[in-house]
Image (cartoon, rainbow, N blue to C red; front, side, top):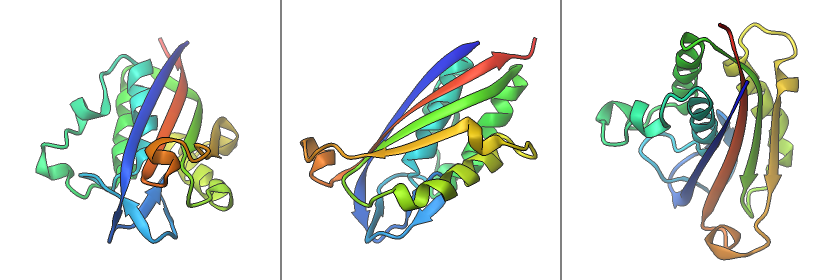
Length: 162
């Protein structure tokens, strides 16, 4: 068994869609980034790669490469899951904490968990029960607390298939 930790953060930007966990969240701003800036999925990818000792998201999908410009992060996660499985690891559980003042995430968490289950555990019954997504505020402290952006922390548990 191995545990991996992932982190990502992005600032809000006018004129972009807010995508978190592969789900479009109604909000007046989106996240600034090279891809669709889905910080939730990016943190999960880093946690998976970390647990499998496969580097980090930037080594697989560099923001200096134009082919990732505007990329759908759900597709990046699908690729990461294939790489982790190819290295003889199975995903046991993923736990995510999203930190932002707004928007409130509680109404969107079921859809996010469903979408992540489709990607992380395709065709497996009960995949949603192996994913936790929590929304927290930063109690108005620092830039995230002032509403400038979002931070995401993710932990993944993998087991060896060897």
